[in-house]
Length: 421
Ligand code: UGA
Image (tube, rainbow, N blue to C red; front, side):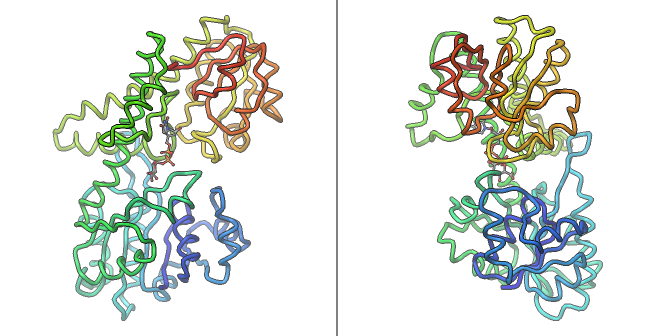
């Protein structure tokens, strides 16, 4: 199949390159020529383990352009993968989706075949039908499901393991209102040998939000229980191993710690809250999930204060990205921790295998180490992200305040406090 991928951010790059690996011909579109140049030189615009290798392997199946109409005319299927950033009131900013829809609609005027337009970006229920579809119809003068196809196909990829997740997914969700679009997506996903859950468009859009909201709820729940376990000398990890054996519950996403960050959970839950409140619906659980998450980093600071007077002391920070194997620092728990430490008058020496170039842009005033070992030479250490290399450090004689359960630190440190254990 020939596929246009609009937007070469995280979702677009992973989706396009992985579909190329599946044998499809990919046309990447972006307004940012530097991202397209990166693709042309065999480098993915986003860091994701294994992605560059796949791109280089499939270079002959990948083209780039800044012109949406060129891509639409050369392909059968267009996937909108642009970002939906958060507005100050928590709702999502649809600017990029709307711009893309206008350009695709114009391109459809001259398109003689039945072109299918799929929204892969995370959008609130109703967006594809009430925002994207009317623009496409107005610009093209054509009718959705009669002259062109429209649908939703949310993604469930995790940063750091997106390539693996793409090829080994639990399920594929497609939202469609017409049989031709359904057939196109069924054909596209048939080789994956994963269950395809086909539903209407707004339900598919809702499934994406509810999946993320539920996973975040599991984490905040595990953190609340973890805080209680710590007070009572109970190992919360052991508790959730036992709890997770119940197949109704399952063991995943119960890793207690400093909380969730990233570009998805915080933003998507906030958007779901705004969506509900705009309709007069209370979201007590979702708000508590956010509140619990916001409180966790502060707990780490409180634990540190039990053992050290922070003012003027040199505090080592291990990990700045929102999770391991990514350079992404969006909503990283390191941000509130560093802010509080600065307020308390600490000197900070931080290390992250990948995220320092990003972190220095927002915190130029702290010091950065060349290696994780260098961070050990501080008055106390705080573990924010569980990068693999932190499991091999020599923590003997150190004070360690751990937000991520690094066992070696727990065994070796002179003074050790886990956030929930
Ligand atoms: C998340 C979802 O897991 C994906 O399914 C979804 O596609 C993606 O959002 C998205 O909407 O695009 P991601 O944000 O990349 O993926 O990363 P996760 O592995 O889910 O981790 C999110 C945060 O939760 C991280 O800060 C992580 O450290 C934290 N976390 C995760 C915990 O604190 N405990 C856990 O048990 C699991």
